[in-house]
Length: 121
Image: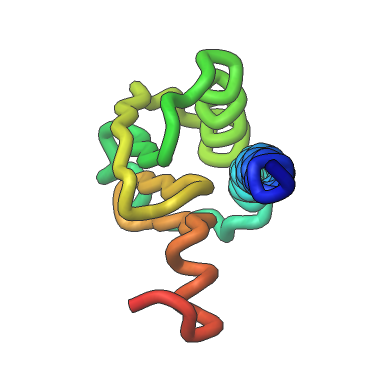
């Protein structure tokens, strides 16, 4: 009887840990996306950017329309050029966002961060 109670306690503890991990991952994902949008404003003006015909966005989860609009507005403001946005999802990035505007790449993915510190290949 005691082992049943202990098993239930263990189950609820594991469930709580899983929920906390999911919440922390969602917060980190949001923070990486916001940082990438902010980083667009710090990009140098690239002379070869007119070659860009679209904004490519890769995310772990589906991108909210308002976030997609923020990215498009930031690019338009920075380069005085409105470009169509193409989005796709890739589970390999584990979180965050990767933005490609022609030859310019903005990599705020969780995978690249983990790779930098040696925790991913």
